[in-house]
Length: 128
Image 1 (cartoon, rainbow, N blue to C red):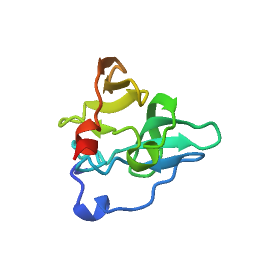
Image 2 (image 1 turned 60 degrees about the vertical axis):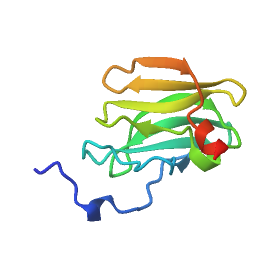
Image 3 (image 1 turned 135 degrees about the vertical axis):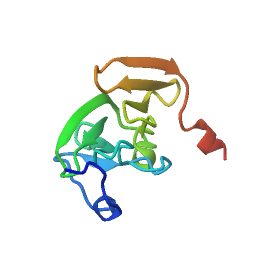
């Protein structure tokens, strides 16, 4: 079976995750994995508990991985956690910490290992 997806398969379509308000960071080029697997990267927030997490979802809508649980904040509904793929699809970068002390996390998907560094993924966008 050909692992390359056609543009028709990748068109915008609704994907729902139970009990989550899902958003993708539209500042990223695409929420689709760059390796052609059809995986979709998004953030999912639970409005009842006011917490969210980064989600990797299959093209059919099944949650494949979830990580980075954090409190929701006002910016969440605009960008999620600024989640974005590495160019090879082996890592995901996302914003963690707090609005006062932001952190950038790089998660290796194969091992789940995370590297945390000080920084704000959205600072440049907010400054214009």
